[in-house]
Amino acid sequence: MIFEKVYGIDLGNSSVKIISGTPGTVYTEKNIIASKGREIIAVGDEAYAMLGKQPQDIRVKSPMAFGMIAELELQEIVLYTMFNRIGDTQGFRSIIYFTAPPDMSPIEKRAYYYVANGHWMRQHKVFLVESPMAEALALGINPDDPTGNMIVNIGSESTSFAIIADGRIIISRKLQTGGKQMTEAVCAEIRSEHHLQIGYMTGHMLKNELGSLGEDEKKGIRVIGIDSVSGLPREEMVTSDVVRAGILNSLSGLAAEMKTFLERIPPQIAMHIKKEGIYLTGGTARLPELHQYLADYTGFIFNLPDIYEKSCIMGLGKIIENKELRRFAQPVTERRL
Figure 1 (cartoon, helix red, strand yellow):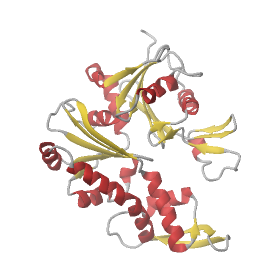
Figure 2 (figure 1 turned 90 degrees about the vertical axis):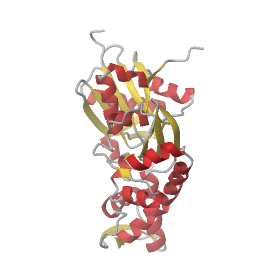
Figure 3 (figure 1 turned 135 degrees about the horizontal axis):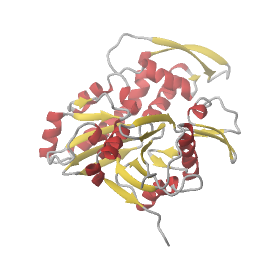
Figure 4 (figure 1 turned 60 degrees about the horizontal axis):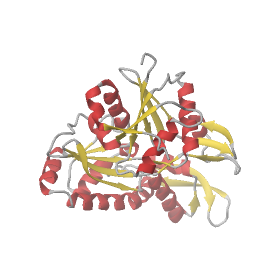
């Protein structure tokens, strides 16, 4: 149709990415919404700026949970707002390609249809592309390679392992561990070490600034929190050693699960992956020396692509540009009773 438009959308706990056009332009905004009862206060980056500073009667959260759609209506509002902000009318009966985790139930898949065909957004054709497959296309991996390739995505609230061979995902695993859990572990370590309560945003800043997993020189940042004993504000110097210990408290379990996963894959595929390396993607992959820590723990090489944080949405861009690649997309329709 002459008015038909095609979009790719990557819904994440942390952010939403939309790609449209050929070549595609990527629009990114935080997947956060602030509400007071039924009233929407702020959406996207504006809502994220309120996180940790909002009054008790205002809720600031992501509509996603552990990589899955948790609140349909709120997620639809976020998408509708983003389309309006980029000045796009969405066309008539547009085609939308969503990235989605593998191994979802039919009900979980239909959630993507209802997000694109609810109260504000309507008359869209919906297709799902498994996230590891989209990433493989973006990274130049041949999905039809029978020898197998492995992608590990460490996101905001979850981590996925996937092995792709013969044009499909043959083995996958998902863990409810990601950057958010690492930040919370940093906050817990500071509370244990310094008897100081800090906010999530402060912990997030410390993780990014001092969270190198290498043997760097000792660094420190002064932060203000609440004394666990007196309940009064107090300033404390937090060092990189404390932040690193907090991250490792969360990361060590993830690394152990990954090693167990690798030990259970077929030996022929394991040999090829060991030779080619494991592709590490996701926003949390930017932690300094994370890939080297995982390599030392598992004994496998890890590759950190330049587009590690945008690999899913770039893969959808490949599908939009190349009709032959649309065989990796599955249509999702409304279930009629």
